[in-house]
Amino acid sequence: MPKPDMTRGPIRVAPSLLSCRFEIMAEEIAAVAEAGADWLHFDVMDGHFVPNISVGPLGVEAARRASPELVLDVHLMISEPDKYLEAFAGAGADILTVHVETSPDIRRTLGRIRDLGVCAGVTLNPGTPLEAVETVLGEVDMVLVMSVNPGFSGQSFIPASLGRIRALRERIGREGLPALLEVDGGVKPGNAAEIREAGADILAAGSAVYGAGDYAEAIRAIRGGG
Ligand code: DX5
Ligand code: ZN
Image (cartoon, rainbow, N blue to C red):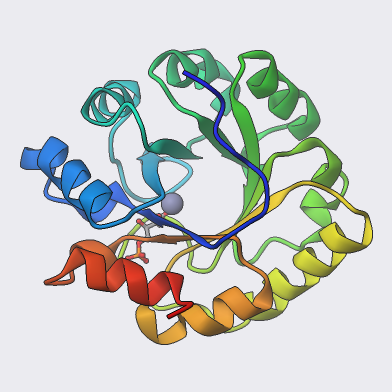
């Protein structure tokens, strides 16, 4: 499996499988692929770092089998992520994103992800100061800005996230770093334009895609650009 294309370019939309109908996950993946999804966003929750439990490596493996082509963007909302990196890499993740709040040595965790041949992402909760990730911006393929408190789909976008996206975009640009910027939580057709304008490269969206009657229309509206 070649590494995903992590160069900046057109806006990418990553439907979040947390909002899909799990009993027919393969069909739900095929449906968003057909509808123009660029990536698949997969949320892993442990009921410890976040107040909800989703699925683990077996779920990622199933998503991988259902779609060998789409970039599998795995968002780890789990305590002690170091214990599970190998399992998620082996399950077929293309990108593993860890919360800065969960690792005692985030630089080491990110290095381990890269050593596994997987793209490394770092993310932070809305309440975590941006300084927490600034020192590793040069060592990641992606920064994920959480625009809701992680744990559940269907929450409202926290407006202060726009300033955080702008600040990170500015910093990444100023330092000439390759990191992509993903935004996750409460992304809808109605606010996608301002999120893109703030500097997002990838928009993850759960309920706005899987809750829509027409997946293609929702993805198009979130991606924008006519
Ligand atoms: C929230 C998850 C999100 C979630 C987004 O903790 O990380 O990826 O699926 O769902 P929406 O787009 O409905 O806010
Ligand atoms: Zn997520």
